[in-house]
Every structure is written in C-alpha cells, then in structure tokens.
Length: 351
Image (cartoon, rainbow, N blue to C red; front, side):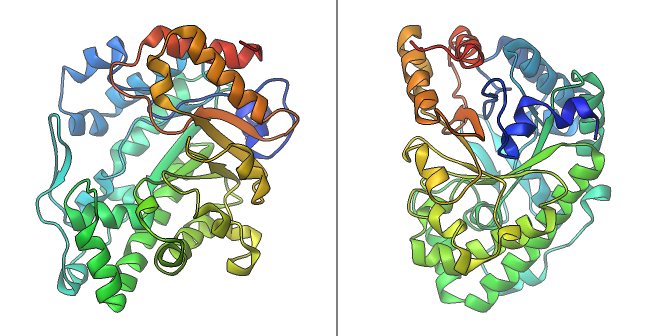
C-alpha cells in the first residue's frame, strides 16, 4: 500500500494509533441532501446510478471533495448483491427497496444461485477503479456489504420491516433452513468483500442495519457466528468496521473472548447514538467509530458544534476514534451544517 494511504488519519485510527487530528467521514455522505447528487440522480434510477461506474464514482468523489472528509465510501447499496442470486429487486420512490419474490421456505433457499461477484457485479469494480484514480493519494476508500442477518431480513421480508415477523419465524421455526441461508449469504458476502479489496478499497464496513431487532440470546446464536465468519475471512487484508443500529446490548458479545478469538473481532466498532461512545473501548475495541445523532444536523449550527464537542470530549485521551454519525445523513440535512461539522472536527475545537 502507498505510504500516504497507510499513514492517513483514517487508517491510523483504524489501527488504534495516535494521529495528529481526529479523522472524520460520514455515513451516506453522498446522498439526496447534496444538490450535486440530486443533479446526477435526476439522470437515472437509483439502481441505474449504482450500476453505472462513472456516475457512482462521481457522486463518491463529489462528496469527499465538497466535505473534505478523511475517507470516501463507495457509492453503492446493500441489496444489489441479491439480484444475481435470483431476487427481483426494485427501488420505489418514497418507499425504498422492494424485493418482489421474497424468500420464505427451505425450498426457496435451495434455489438460490451462488455467482462469483467478480463476474456478476463488475460495475462495482469499475466504480472502485475510477474512484481510486480520482481520490487524493492520502484519502482511503471504504467498501462495504450488508451483514448476513441484515441481508436475510431484507430478502425474507421483501423490504424494510418494523417487526421482522417472517424473518424471526424462519429463524426460530426452522433452524436448519436458517443455517443454510446464513451459510449461503456468508459465502456471498465474503466473496463480495474480498472482490472489493482486490479491486482497490482500503477498508470495509459490514452493515448490520436490522440486527438490533434481536435479543442478545438470539443474536449470539443466530447472527453473531456468521458475522464472525465474514470478519475472519477479511481481517488482516484491510481494516474491518462493524456497524449496526440498536446494538447497545449486543456489542459486548462481539468482543467476548469466549465467543471467538481476536481474528473474528472487527478492527473498528461503529456506535450509534443510543450507546455512549466510551462503551466501545470498554468492551474491548481498539478503535471506535461514531456517534453523533444525524438529526442533530438540523439544529442551529452552534448546537451542532456543541453536540460534536461532546463526542470529541468522550474520546479525549483515547486513540482510535473515527468521528462519524450514529447513522446515515438524512435527506434535507443542511449541507452547510455538514461542512461546518467536518471543519470543526478537524480543528479539534470546543463549542
């Protein structure tokens, strides 16, 4: 790896090393709140944007340049990996993703395809190549994928869900079918992340967006083992970030030595705003990412900076802090507030 990348603020923090300033990037930093993104999005569908390397690269690069953040994240989505497996996926305006043939039975699991993402998703590799060429030499690129439980929840429910009735019914009612599904998704996700690393990303984030719906006991039995398999296959090649929402009661299990050696634990744990930032280090993480409430960005600027100062104070004296939000930037977020936040974190000021 180029020494400029190796010594970047972001990768130093991922390794738990001390840096001259706190690195910052923001989940969904390329999104509808940006006029530049909306102009590009107007030319195509959301799925078309994800599958057109030139456009995906442009929105990725625009966000990094406009905000001045310390890392770029590949513009993509968690769910296109499902299409080559046989799922019919669309994105409905105002409603989000919809899977028209949700998985509900063991027979559905047996019919899933297992393509090599290098052949089935070449547009991702094309975007990574263009982004890496366009980024400054000291700015890492983050790739990502959905974690096995979250991918399964989307595939089974057919989209987002409040209660995950179908998912939990399969998980608890047919453990053999659930295990087969987790094995399938774990292999596909692992191959996809390894392909992204081959294509040129410097870190990967595993999103477990829906895992907060589980009790600690169900998480330990039905989700965590598969997360650990993915991490073990990728860790050591690039830093691995693990992020989920509503995970305050679950994260201690991720770092419990009785549930897996260090090579099954993420390099960085992402913390949402429900969990105190310090908790990440207390449970054993060497690097912690988070955890400003994204809704704070709608407040007057001084209030935004005051809340950011609280996050920085929580990390004071510790190595391995990556400033981020506790979830993605929301539509209609004031761009000027986002820019001011990044500048404030870089300056290390107190409001």
